[in-house]
Image 1 (cartoon, rainbow, N blue to C red):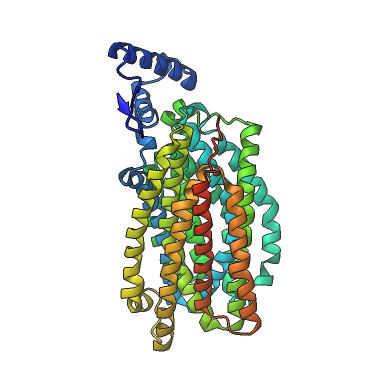
Image 2: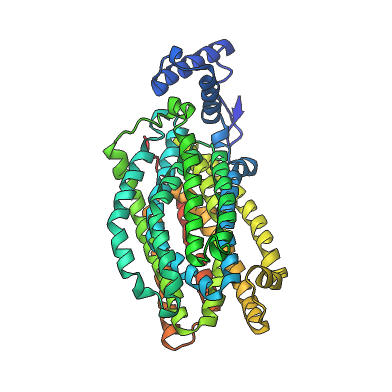
Length: 506
């Protein structure tokens, strides 16, 4: 017997029936569930697959997939965080090599990356939404349909990329200054052509996160990053008489090869027999209803990210035209910001996986505990990031970026404090609150808020400062902090209202 909030005794249904009948009833339910969900014959599956099936069912049928403690959040998110860390280390190594090769090459690659993000991130938004469906199907124990959103979103996004790609390549020169075009244009073209591989990798990663198999993402990322670390050095600086020095183009080629390696590994595990027997990952199917829901949920986020990435790309391009020193400081801080986003993206995916499993299992009450766990993790991460940015800024600038000018180091130190505050509130808006709202399918509200905050807190003020010639690198991160504070407040109010919560797989 249990007590309710008023202290009255209530029946929880456990002691009313004999224990044996409970086990028999549960066994019957699980048997019926497995026969419908798996839809396979016992004789056709080897013992290894049964063992794998029991592990998957133990995660979904019991409490592990809906346990929202700090420990389980770390269990779900840390492998993803580490895989994204290794991916960000790949980009950081490229930027570090390029900074020692030429600051012009560093500025060019940074600008090209931001311009390519205008195309990439709207498409990635759709694959992130597919994680919500995977998590809710998994939480609802509907294993057969768990892989269904993955096939459809990959095909849809590659078609979208094929339509956008020619326009991106043709008009990119309008946003790249003549001083940076030599290095930026080839790198931008490589970034555009590697987008289909990133789409496949992102979509399949969503499957492994939603089904709580994140270690596979970690393994694939490590192999790819080891390859990139070796290839980037030789392709950027060259080997006399063997490989010519390719600069920024070499960094792009190294990234492309490493991404192919990572995608091949994760695709192998996705199609492996154990996953195929349970989730039917080899059975390419089409469900117009799921695709429409995915597009409907992903479109608002895609529009929001197009506007947001577009605004920041235009700001970077304008800085490159007006003052190359301010552009260098902006790009140095942007490199650190992008590197730290492995924590934001990793924990956001972990939060989305746990929250969507809770919604699918109809255990929404556990999400309050998840938010508290998020806040505890956020405080620790923010304190950890403060150490290099606020305590050892000179060392970062000298050894990683090769910047030794005292005047520039003094200016960038001021920007670092604003950058740290900005990262903290990005964690608040994206990881703590955005992950939960995304899991509930509240993408339309998220889009309206992010677009409005970008326009009124970043775009309009930046235009005014550029108009009067007073825009600096510091203002980028002050405006970015204002944007994230407004988003965090409005996301929290939305969460408290409860209007964000929708079960998409009922």
